[in-house]
Amino acid sequence: MSSTHGIAEATAKRRFGKRRTSRINYIPLFLMMLPGVVYLIANNYIPMFGVLIAFKKLDYAKGIFLSDWCGFANFEYLFKTKEAFIMIRNTIGYNLVFISVGLVVALSIAIMMTEIGKKKIAKFIQPAICFPNMISIIIVAYLVYAFLGSNGFVNKSILGGHGIKWYSEAKYWPGILIIVNFWKSAGYSSIIYIASISGIDTSLYEAAKLDGASKMQQITKITLPIIRPMIILMLLLSVSKIFNSDFGLFLQVPMNSGMLFSTTQTIDTYVYRSLMQLNNVGMSSAASVFQSVIGFVLVMLSNTLVRRVDKESALF
Amino acid sequence: MKIKMKNSEKRFQNISLIIMLIITALCIMPFVLMIAASITDENVLIKEGYKFWPSKVNFEAYQYLWAKRETIFGAYGISILVTAVGTFINVTLTSLFAYPLSRQDFKYRNFFAFFIFFTILFNGGMTASYIVWTQLFHVKNTLWGLLIPNYLMGAFNVLLVRNYYMASIPVSILEAARVDGAKELGIYTMIILPLSKPVIITISLFSGMAYWNDWTNGLYYVTDARLYSINVFLNRLMNNIAFLKSSSTLTEGANLVGLDLPSVGIRMAIAVIAMLPVLIIFPMIQAQLIKGVVIGGVKG
Image 1 (spheres, rainbow over the protein chains, first blue to last red):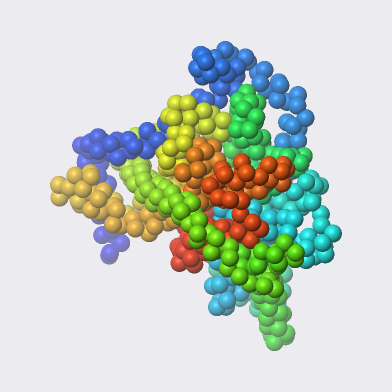
Image 2: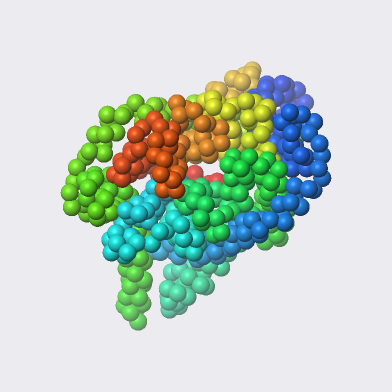
């Protein structure tokens, strides 16, 4: 009875709505969006045309738009340098570790957290493991310095004074940066998996238990298959960002130390250093445009793949 | 059989708990070291290094900072100002932009949705942004440089708010209001805003955290020490430490930040002070923040 009433009401509403749409005054809506549109043009769209700078020989005397074109010269020059190889290798290499190990870490934490979810202490653990992600990377850099600096905990207390000069030995930094990255982001990245695991119908587990399934079997046969679409989605999203790096992690944590470039330079830090420290707009813009264009291609590709896996989760 | 199974369940739970407690301890440990170092006697620090359990405690570092409080409080003031104003503008712009996008009867909604969505897909890169903001809009060494680039409105928050409006504000309410003769702006302020409190809180938290923790705008657009926010201040201090390690000319670097070069303990004290607001506020907002991440997490 009430459902038929509901349908009747909905139909009436639709008709009513249609009649009204023709009379809607769009001007207030446009005015509401105006400040946002202006900001997007300034912050996002004008810089998009700024990619043209990479194809110019920038001359401030002539101005940005009147500088001479130089074709792909900036790119050719960039890719001839050894630095181009190093920064691309580092960016992709670190990302591969972050993505693969990160998935295992985030899933493990999520499974363990749901296991202890009912205990009171979980209410304390979850915020505590998310906290490192809430502070700025500058403070993280200070924390790392407290461990690795010349008066640091590691040198003075663990190595007994026979210190290692951490900030001038490049070979240690892949390990350090990987540890710092997971220390900072592991808890936070597990949130999304905790949410999707807690959405699983508990009667599935009850039934499995009655059939004598062990905990491991429950995880591999119920939990993981059910959240598989979410896992694939998160993986594809992170793969589409594989040419981007956490600028702060790679610039601040190694304290911008020149002796560590071979293992800490990524595309983002290179763009910053050539622009702000070396004043080489050509190289900087070439690297930054290279990153944007590849990023665009990768987002489009991964979205196509996501659509195949799960249309609902696709970005568009 | 049943009892045995229960035991294995119990064991798994206990192992999980132990591992999670270890992870929690690892997450907290560095902060303890930092706080301990900041209250350790300077001579002990130089001799024994940073330790979790200082053999001699004093608060000289904080007393020194209190004596030099103008610099630190100035940086705090800038951080608070930029965070408050930036978050307010962000929430206003985001909500105003998201509302028309949520309206099924707005003919151009797809165009505007694409207009904002495209900014997720493609960007001009940092170099282009820098040149646009400095050469075209001249924000270098102004407060605008901290406030405007990057954080004023973002596609992620807009889509979050739009989805919220679409899911939780019934079309019938809007139509009833229109039949009663309400104007668009009236509908927005009297109906939409009061109903959207939860999502507004969520995006305020996201935006507030982004502004408070920002240091990149400071790095690119601000070199005037009077405009340093607390994180920019910490960053410059860090650079000076690095600079001092590579050369022996002390004075120049120290003067840059308007302080004598902080000694070993004082660096950590400044970092503690910079972290304090987040440490105090985070426990209050964490539940809401985590909820927000769950709602928006995938597409962020």
